[in-house]
Image 1 (cartoon, rainbow, N blue to C red):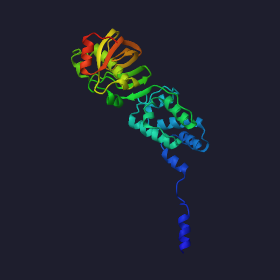
Image 2 (tube, rainbow, N blue to C red):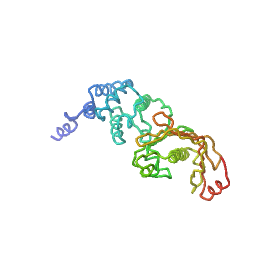
Image 3 (cartoon, rainbow, N blue to C red):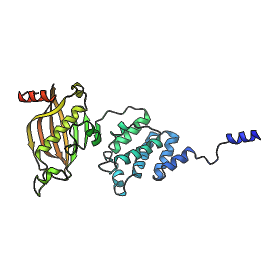
Image 4 (cartoon, rainbow, N blue to C red):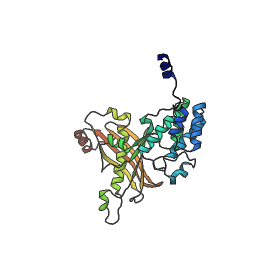
Length: 295
């Protein structure tokens, strides 16, 4: 009798779901094509099936009105801006991709996957064992605020990308900025001085997130000391998305100098030939600026 009980315990459970059944359950709200591609990938490891699986999973999290945008075949489609996916939804979709394809994506890698093309290329490279080509590093507003001295409501960067000596940033004018109530009455116009401030902040962020920042001493701060060749080319109003860019021109401690420009819908809004910053203690910064020090 004890032998019979022992044999019963060793018998596999007849109703235990198979790996394929578990995958189907995970993807139950995805299209039949997505499920079929995921099952086929599990069997063959054919990387050419990855785009079908990835796009099918992303579609499962979208509102109906943006599905056609995803299906347009444009790899430059952005998850947040074009498809309306927030950070939490992106994490859910990525977790499903990981489970379906057996791939692991680190949180810091996820921030760089901003477009459909980014995700497809990254997953395919991971599964093929190919090294992913280095690209501009993306920072959401949470990561920007974590390192910037400026904070809400005086932080004018909502996202940024760092690529070598260059940085890109975005700030959308909401119309809720307090200073717009008086600039101007019944005609809100984003101040030119704040446009320049936004470029300066992007320069500060570039400095703080590159290796150059390692040379700064403990207790040092970054101060704006001047700007040359500043031109404003259009009025910026609520609803405009400011596309900021700066490029490091030169650095001679304690000074660092950037050029910068702002576009709105591809149209030039403002430019600055030079934006000068100083990295120093309060006393050193005051002495340097009073003596007219130039980088």
